[in-house]
Image (cartoon, rainbow, N blue to C red):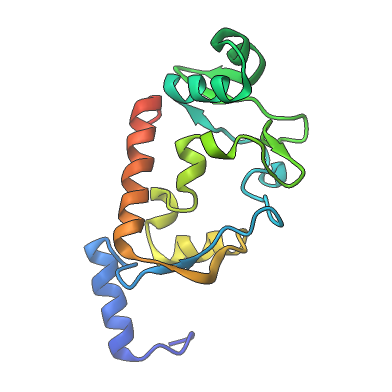
Length: 164
């Protein structure tokens, strides 16, 4: 094979991929923030950080704002869902000095990256995301059970925000 896998390794990868848990051995990931904030920046263009009402309230409380004041300043409606607004350069409105200014109460979508279903679909989509995220492949092994937990949290967050 082009990347040097043996026949047995290739066969196991295909079995795991078909079973849906191609990451059974775990994956290396460690967020590189504050040195990297690419997933929060506008480098990829416009994006959406989907929010539930509870997440909006938590953010408002953290910032010492009333709910309606917070939503008028930081939230936009997109069809039947709500997303954080962005800065003119498409950075997250809470990206400050290379880090998240609301990190303790960041939305589910932010907490579960890069373990999103569209990224975890296959080794190829994970590898593609690794081209944009320097934390993928880093020195911390995330076990398969934690990956499953992150995926479940992300899917539940998507259901609660109405985007799934």
